Length: 231
Image (cartoon, rainbow, N blue to C red; front, side, top):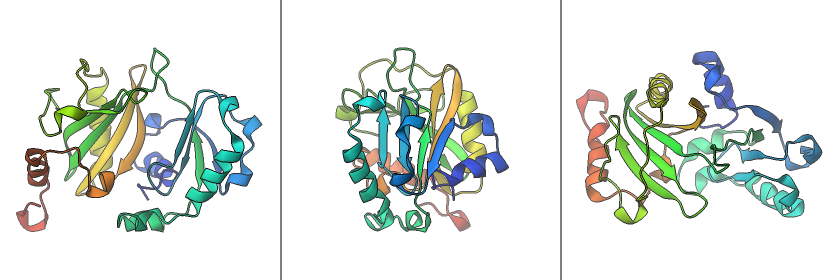
């Protein structure tokens, strides 16, 4: 349920704090239901049953709607979970959601704060930045010290400030992560307010190449399995 980008709204409303949710503009069962004139100029459109099924626009008039329909119909017909053995995605009934477009004060896509929670406890955060110019990935511990668990070529050389609402993000992440052995809980900073992004149980299908060997070993040590063993 929590990997479902639509059902997770109900989960958070029922079990946590709905104030962290982004504004949900529309929900569709199929692309042909979309009425583009009813949507704002800026929005983020997502299919709910996988990752990377996103169309984010600052101006819908720049979209080629025929191409969008082709892309959406392709995505909606795919069994995403079979691509990389993430079968929980195949249990999700595909839908299309439209969320409010979030931007920073410069009018750019905001930083993405991805909090890794092991056994219900937040351990570190991955900050994704510079999406417009080429995605950069920086890891920090909860005291906002850089962690050398990724590859230097993937990191931003720019100073990345700790968001003022970071403690709130961690609190929300741990509350949502409590029932799970591992989950990554993502947030955006919208004018000092944490906005929920998604919950991911198998980041990059557990095949990410952006960790170094030290990072892989460290992450494995953080996961405590039943009986006290570690992964």
